[in-house]
Length: 292
Ligand code: AMP
Image (cartoon, rainbow, N blue to C red):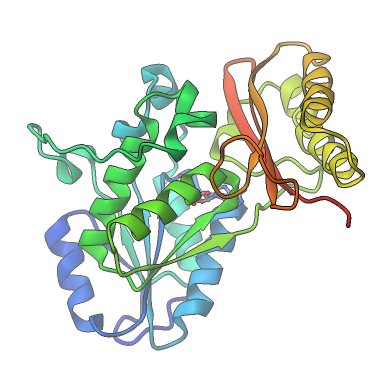
């Protein structure tokens, strides 16, 4: 249950004005924002509970539930994205959220909007290379949410590692006075990273999907023991290619900070994967380091 300052029950805002009115009494206190696209699961719940403990009893937790059309490069993917608003509200309530912002695209965007916001270095690789415009859409919506909510803090998951890196860059380069927090990847017992898209997997692909994490863990151990980037990526590719109906988008080992090729073995690295299991595109990653 929300344990806030003025709200005994969670409040829902569908318009920008409603949101501003609900937040007016908490200006000056800690406000923690968790942006989501809905179809919430235990991964989101973990971020929301972290937000609650970060905000404390005095602060305010805001969750946004907005399926942002601007970040979808594929109309079919947007149309098939699950939406469960009633269950989302219940989960937010259970996690102690104070305010849920649930706008429609028409509320969020003017029909003749004409400003874009493009990060030009970290966005050129990995998911940015295969999903043109995706991260510009993410930066735009997150910037708008930051302006509307004016949080002191915001929490993002490391499952979308590249997104977090790009948003950190946006906050740095635009001097946005908000502290970003990265949350560890939440997995099912079988190791599959929780994702709203998992419900779209066929039973066969759902059974096979935990191999992604298994392959990443094996590859991380090989990297720690000295295997080179090519060998590490090849082992993950071979493992994924052995699964029926899987098409690899990318398997790449990159510098964990700049997301480009590793030039210094001593720096933390990231092994990132995107693969289609049938129609469903899954992503996962693991942070790597060498054994000293
Ligand atoms: P989404 O609704 O997929 O846009 O996700 C909203 C936020 O939850 C993003 O910051 C994601 O990185 C985060 N998130 C989604 N799934 C997970 C997960 N399995 N573990 C950690 N964070 C997650």
